[in-house]
Length: 209
Image 1 (cartoon, rainbow, N blue to C red):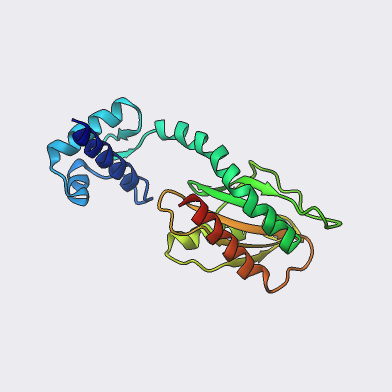
Image 2 (image 1 turned 180 degrees about the vertical axis):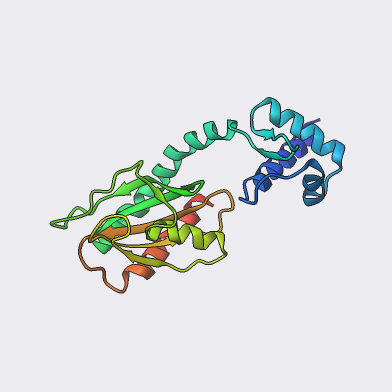
């Protein structure tokens, strides 16, 4: 029974990951094919997940993530912040700019962790909880690049705040997380800022992996 329960749990998690890939809803038949499971097994999984609010079906019968996952996502944010702060602190002190971890929430980017440098005369006051469209700013563009399979860093100027320069790189290798690590400042950024941000993103990915 323990082995059977573990297998059911693994299948349910695979189903949730599939629905979280950003491609929209699926029919039970499509889920059956993509998961290589029989339709009766998929229907049993959906019945359980629907009863817990983790999936829902629309009027056309397509299956989507349910609002129950939002509760889990809200619980994860403090864990992400705790894991990210040491890396962001080193990055902020090294580059001399405000460092941040931004995660995707639909078409928006949400800053879940921010660390300001201790030794600079002036730095950008970027608040945790700040939200902006992914299409604007280096942090959002890095996340969009991640969705397209790219892992390079992006630099922008004045897109979110006049005079502010930003550099960000995606956090790669974590299918359950769409995020980027970046820095933002009003002053100039050295050319090494891009590689340093990439290294910080890789360090965080290793810590969370």
